[in-house]
Length: 302
View 1: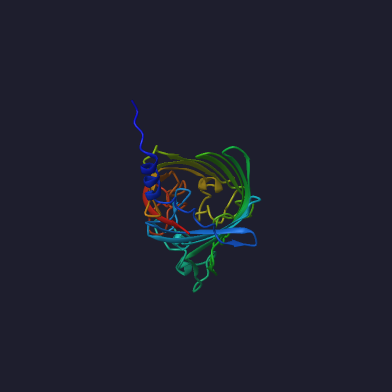
View 2: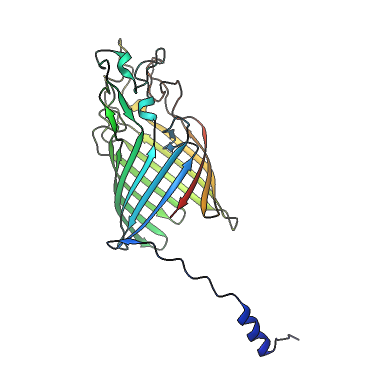
């Protein structure tokens, strides 16, 4: 036979139960846009499988404005070194683009330098939740690199603009980005460069861990770029040599209000052109920006 507590005893237990936690306060708003943001510390900055800091630590920040209608605008900041780390010479005689005076004429001018240590990103668009767990995302992304570009030679300033279209369902997302600027990431005549990105953030039961899986493909159009792909004797290729694929597998978990993520990335980016001396993704230190890499990040939302 089931037994029941007396009404008085039950009332006493209910009285001793702690009250439910109040809901978190809503984020501050600006002109009807909810204001949120985040800060990140990382062992390095990986973008589309390529290290942007030559394997060195990164500090990043982001501020986001989101309207209930679906419109949003964001700003991000990060330290970088990849642009001035580029090899402006040859693998056999490397010279950093940060000090290209030693390369000499005709492309470079003695005594003039380049510097780019900061990435500033601006992006915005519209997100539409058109069905349960389904979201469509359309927008523009502007990459800015404040710095000094006196002597870029065969390169171009790295400022770039992309348009993107993405669709997500629950923990899966697919996104297509396409360059609408004439140059892309310092590469001349790169209009139409595209990136396709499939990402899965799979919750692992009730463990609190999330499995991170990603695959991407960067495709540059096969446009001629004789200033870059000329080794003084012959043409060694075209912009299609900048194309590559990248992959990621990792895990993340929230601990004490911060998100810890550990990931392994790999990119089959070409280090050198077909002559084995003209650098493509190999920097002045002789390191390919791609390849296999492990990265730890710690992020805190606010």
